Length: 243
Image (cartoon, rainbow, N blue to C red):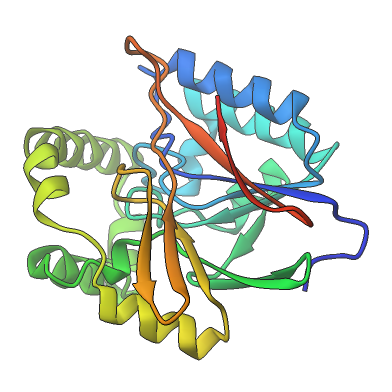
Protein backbone atom coordinates (compact mmCIF):
# COMPACT_ATOMS: atom_id res chain seq x y z
CA UNK A 1 0.00 0.00 0.00
CA UNK A 2 1.46 3.35 -1.02
CA UNK A 3 1.66 5.97 1.75
CA UNK A 4 -1.34 8.28 1.75
CA UNK A 5 0.85 11.34 1.19
CA UNK A 6 2.20 10.10 -2.16
CA UNK A 7 0.75 12.08 -5.05
CA UNK A 8 2.99 10.82 -7.88
CA UNK A 9 5.24 7.81 -8.46
CA UNK A 10 7.84 7.51 -11.24
CA UNK A 11 8.88 4.14 -12.69
CA UNK A 12 12.19 3.69 -14.55
CA UNK A 13 14.12 0.67 -15.81
CA UNK A 14 16.99 -0.53 -17.99
CA UNK A 15 19.42 2.36 -17.63
CA UNK A 16 22.39 -0.04 -17.88
CA UNK A 17 24.69 2.38 -16.09
CA UNK A 18 28.42 1.88 -16.32
CA UNK A 19 31.66 3.82 -16.73
CA UNK A 20 30.92 4.29 -20.45
CA UNK A 21 27.47 5.87 -19.90
CA UNK A 22 28.18 9.31 -18.37
CA UNK A 23 25.35 10.95 -20.30
CA UNK A 24 22.81 8.44 -19.05
CA UNK A 25 24.04 8.78 -15.47
CA UNK A 26 23.80 12.57 -15.74
CA UNK A 27 20.26 12.31 -17.09
CA UNK A 28 19.22 10.10 -14.19
CA UNK A 29 20.79 12.51 -11.72
CA UNK A 30 18.87 15.39 -13.32
CA UNK A 31 15.58 13.51 -13.25
CA UNK A 32 15.97 12.50 -9.61
CA UNK A 33 16.82 16.11 -8.70
CA UNK A 34 13.89 17.67 -10.55
CA UNK A 35 11.04 15.19 -10.55
CA UNK A 36 7.89 16.20 -8.70
CA UNK A 37 7.23 12.55 -7.80
CA UNK A 38 7.21 11.50 -4.17
CA UNK A 39 8.84 8.17 -4.99
CA UNK A 40 10.95 6.70 -7.78
CA UNK A 41 10.88 2.94 -8.36
CA UNK A 42 13.83 1.53 -10.31
CA UNK A 43 12.61 -1.68 -11.95
CA UNK A 44 15.84 -3.49 -12.76
CA UNK A 45 18.97 -3.31 -14.90
CA UNK A 46 19.85 0.04 -13.43
CA UNK A 47 23.47 -1.11 -13.70
CA UNK A 48 24.91 -2.74 -16.79
CA UNK A 49 26.55 -5.29 -14.54
CA UNK A 50 26.83 -5.72 -10.76
CA UNK A 51 29.32 -8.27 -9.44
CA UNK A 52 28.88 -7.74 -5.71
CA UNK A 53 28.47 -4.93 -3.22
CA UNK A 54 32.20 -4.66 -2.54
CA UNK A 55 32.41 -3.12 -6.03
CA UNK A 56 30.50 -0.08 -4.75
CA UNK A 57 33.81 1.50 -3.73
CA UNK A 58 35.17 1.49 -7.29
CA UNK A 59 35.31 4.98 -8.90
CA UNK A 60 32.23 4.81 -11.12
CA UNK A 61 30.16 2.83 -8.66
CA UNK A 62 31.03 5.13 -5.77
CA UNK A 63 29.88 8.15 -7.78
CA UNK A 64 26.61 6.47 -8.73
CA UNK A 65 25.95 5.44 -5.13
CA UNK A 66 26.60 8.98 -3.89
CA UNK A 67 24.16 10.35 -6.45
CA UNK A 68 21.46 7.86 -5.42
CA UNK A 69 22.05 8.57 -1.74
CA UNK A 70 21.59 12.30 -2.35
CA UNK A 71 18.35 11.65 -4.23
CA UNK A 72 17.06 9.42 -1.44
CA UNK A 73 17.22 12.40 0.92
CA UNK A 74 14.45 14.20 -1.00
CA UNK A 75 12.27 11.32 -2.22
CA UNK A 76 11.56 7.66 -1.55
CA UNK A 77 13.80 5.45 -3.68
CA UNK A 78 13.13 1.77 -4.41
CA UNK A 79 15.08 -0.88 -6.30
CA UNK A 80 13.98 -4.09 -8.02
CA UNK A 81 16.67 -6.42 -9.33
CA UNK A 82 16.98 -7.08 -13.04
CA UNK A 83 18.88 -9.68 -15.00
CA UNK A 84 22.06 -7.54 -14.96
CA UNK A 85 22.07 -6.32 -11.36
CA UNK A 86 20.50 -9.20 -9.43
CA UNK A 87 23.56 -9.33 -7.15
CA UNK A 88 22.77 -5.96 -5.60
CA UNK A 89 22.72 -6.62 -1.87
CA UNK A 90 21.99 -5.04 1.48
CA UNK A 91 25.23 -3.04 1.63
CA UNK A 92 24.57 -1.18 -1.61
CA UNK A 93 20.90 -0.63 -0.78
CA UNK A 94 21.85 0.85 2.59
CA UNK A 95 24.59 3.08 1.17
CA UNK A 96 22.33 4.34 -1.63
CA UNK A 97 19.30 4.88 0.59
CA UNK A 98 17.18 2.48 -1.45
CA UNK A 99 14.53 -0.01 -0.36
CA UNK A 100 14.40 -3.41 -2.07
CA UNK A 101 11.30 -4.45 -4.00
CA UNK A 102 10.51 -8.11 -4.73
CA UNK A 103 9.82 -9.14 -8.32
CA UNK A 104 6.91 -8.95 -8.90
CA UNK A 105 5.49 -6.24 -6.61
CA UNK A 106 1.91 -5.05 -6.27
CA UNK A 107 1.64 -1.28 -5.85
CA UNK A 108 -1.72 -0.35 -4.36
CA UNK A 109 -1.94 3.36 -5.09
CA UNK A 110 -4.30 6.03 -6.37
CA UNK A 111 -7.30 3.74 -6.22
CA UNK A 112 -5.73 1.03 -8.39
CA UNK A 113 -3.56 -2.07 -8.06
CA UNK A 114 -0.54 -1.97 -10.36
CA UNK A 115 1.67 -5.03 -10.87
CA UNK A 116 5.35 -4.17 -11.30
CA UNK A 117 8.06 -6.52 -12.60
CA UNK A 118 11.38 -6.43 -14.37
CA UNK A 119 10.05 -8.80 -17.02
CA UNK A 120 12.82 -11.32 -17.59
CA UNK A 121 11.12 -14.08 -15.57
CA UNK A 122 8.18 -14.02 -17.97
CA UNK A 123 10.25 -14.49 -21.16
CA UNK A 124 9.51 -18.20 -21.12
CA UNK A 125 10.42 -18.87 -24.76
CA UNK A 126 14.07 -18.04 -23.99
CA UNK A 127 14.71 -21.40 -22.37
CA UNK A 128 18.48 -20.96 -22.31
CA UNK A 129 18.17 -17.74 -20.33
CA UNK A 130 15.60 -19.25 -17.97
CA UNK A 131 18.00 -22.08 -17.16
CA UNK A 132 20.78 -19.57 -16.46
CA UNK A 133 18.38 -17.45 -14.39
CA UNK A 134 17.47 -20.43 -12.20
CA UNK A 135 21.15 -21.24 -11.65
CA UNK A 136 22.32 -17.68 -10.98
CA UNK A 137 19.52 -16.97 -8.50
CA UNK A 138 20.43 -19.97 -6.36
CA UNK A 139 22.05 -19.38 -2.99
CA UNK A 140 24.83 -21.83 -3.78
CA UNK A 141 25.82 -20.18 -7.07
CA UNK A 142 25.77 -16.70 -5.60
CA UNK A 143 27.80 -17.71 -2.56
CA UNK A 144 30.43 -19.33 -4.77
CA UNK A 145 30.59 -16.40 -7.16
CA UNK A 146 30.79 -13.74 -4.44
CA UNK A 147 33.59 -15.68 -2.75
CA UNK A 148 35.83 -15.08 -5.77
CA UNK A 149 38.21 -12.08 -5.78
CA UNK A 150 36.65 -8.84 -7.03
CA UNK A 151 39.01 -8.64 -10.00
CA UNK A 152 37.95 -12.11 -11.14
CA UNK A 153 34.28 -11.21 -10.82
CA UNK A 154 34.83 -7.97 -12.74
CA UNK A 155 36.52 -9.91 -15.55
CA UNK A 156 33.56 -12.29 -15.63
CA UNK A 157 31.22 -9.31 -15.83
CA UNK A 158 33.13 -7.78 -18.74
CA UNK A 159 33.08 -11.04 -20.65
CA UNK A 160 29.38 -11.56 -20.01
CA UNK A 161 28.65 -7.99 -21.13
CA UNK A 162 30.56 -8.44 -24.39
CA UNK A 163 28.76 -11.70 -25.13
CA UNK A 164 25.42 -10.12 -24.33
CA UNK A 165 26.03 -7.14 -26.60
CA UNK A 166 26.98 -9.44 -29.46
CA UNK A 167 23.70 -11.33 -29.25
CA UNK A 168 21.38 -8.72 -27.75
CA UNK A 169 19.59 -7.58 -30.90
CA UNK A 170 18.70 -11.10 -31.98
CA UNK A 171 17.63 -12.06 -28.47
CA UNK A 172 15.41 -9.02 -28.02
CA UNK A 173 13.66 -9.60 -31.33
CA UNK A 174 13.23 -13.33 -30.73
CA UNK A 175 11.79 -13.21 -27.22
CA UNK A 176 9.05 -11.38 -25.41
CA UNK A 177 6.96 -11.90 -22.32
CA UNK A 178 4.62 -14.86 -22.40
CA UNK A 179 1.05 -13.55 -22.57
CA UNK A 180 -0.44 -16.43 -20.56
CA UNK A 181 2.14 -15.96 -17.82
CA UNK A 182 1.36 -12.24 -17.66
CA UNK A 183 -2.37 -12.85 -17.45
CA UNK A 184 -1.86 -15.40 -14.69
CA UNK A 185 0.30 -12.97 -12.70
CA UNK A 186 -2.25 -10.20 -13.04
CA UNK A 187 -5.14 -12.38 -11.97
CA UNK A 188 -3.23 -13.72 -8.98
CA UNK A 189 -2.36 -10.16 -7.94
CA UNK A 190 -5.88 -8.82 -8.48
CA UNK A 191 -4.46 -6.19 -10.83
CA UNK A 192 -5.30 -5.20 -14.40
CA UNK A 193 -2.05 -3.52 -15.49
CA UNK A 194 1.45 -5.04 -15.55
CA UNK A 195 4.29 -2.52 -15.90
CA UNK A 196 7.75 -3.86 -16.74
CA UNK A 197 11.02 -3.26 -18.55
CA UNK A 198 13.66 -5.71 -19.83
CA UNK A 199 12.62 -5.97 -23.50
CA UNK A 200 13.68 -2.43 -24.49
CA UNK A 201 10.49 -2.18 -26.55
CA UNK A 202 8.26 0.51 -25.04
CA UNK A 203 4.64 -0.19 -25.91
CA UNK A 204 1.24 -1.07 -24.51
CA UNK A 205 -0.23 -4.53 -25.10
CA UNK A 206 -3.86 -5.58 -24.72
CA UNK A 207 -3.94 -8.97 -22.98
CA UNK A 208 -7.70 -9.33 -23.23
CA UNK A 209 -10.37 -9.44 -20.52
CA UNK A 210 -9.50 -5.90 -19.46
CA UNK A 211 -5.85 -6.77 -18.79
CA UNK A 212 -2.83 -4.97 -20.25
CA UNK A 213 0.92 -4.75 -19.97
CA UNK A 214 2.88 -1.53 -20.35
CA UNK A 215 6.57 -1.66 -21.27
CA UNK A 216 9.15 0.89 -20.14
CA UNK A 217 11.88 2.09 -22.46
CA UNK A 218 15.53 1.43 -21.88
CA UNK A 219 17.77 4.51 -21.50
CA UNK A 220 20.67 5.52 -23.72
CA UNK A 221 21.75 9.14 -23.61
CA UNK A 222 25.09 8.37 -25.26
CA UNK A 223 23.51 7.95 -28.70
CA UNK A 224 21.79 10.23 -31.20
CA UNK A 225 18.91 10.58 -30.85
CA UNK A 226 18.94 9.75 -27.15
CA UNK A 227 16.18 7.59 -25.74
CA UNK A 228 14.58 6.98 -22.40
CA UNK A 229 11.31 7.48 -20.62
CA UNK A 230 9.57 7.17 -17.29
CA UNK A 231 6.05 6.14 -16.42
CA UNK A 232 4.28 8.31 -13.88
CA UNK A 233 1.43 6.97 -11.79
CA UNK A 234 -0.98 9.35 -10.05
CA UNK A 235 -4.67 9.84 -9.39
CA UNK A 236 -4.93 10.76 -13.07
CA UNK A 237 -3.79 7.27 -14.04
CA UNK A 238 -0.72 6.30 -16.08
CA UNK A 239 1.34 8.80 -18.08
CA UNK A 240 4.46 8.14 -20.14
CA UNK A 241 7.06 10.88 -19.71
CA UNK A 242 9.67 11.39 -22.45
CA UNK A 243 13.03 12.36 -20.98
